Length: 211
Ligand SMILES: [Zn+2]
Image (cartoon, rainbow, N blue to C red):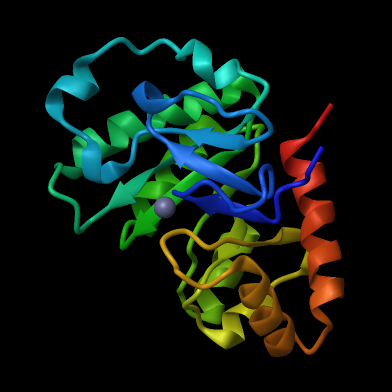
């Protein structure tokens, strides 16, 4: 069994099982040896979707599905924030039911996100993916218990401020190979790529492969 080193992408990895591939609930058709996250992206939120059944899709319990998401809140998305919050809250509940981490897409909606987190007091980890904020914002999220995932673009000071146990690496939409992203991030943190891979591997085991 491969432990994924890329926790968020939209493409199948070149080596099966080395990434968590994000798909929409209706597009889930698992390939052997791959890992997935299933969720509704805030860009795809529509009033019909928000009014549909609130129960947890059975696919979320599939053993190859490691996380719920990406779900999130995005001030630049077309859907009104109230609708986005409704669907995000629903998916956060699914994550609780399925006992799987929640992968979060967040754009300019920190207050709304923290409000939902306070309301729900989730027991599963919440991971903000593609984190590009400043170090001070990273520290705020860390105080609130979030994990953060870094891709191709980020503030180096924010990456440096991360405690090893709260850090992930992802390719998302990037064309750059995940190995190269590890090399770059390791250089920023002043460690070897191997050490960073070992750190993230430990975090992936702890969060996504909980017994
Ligand atoms: Zn994504």
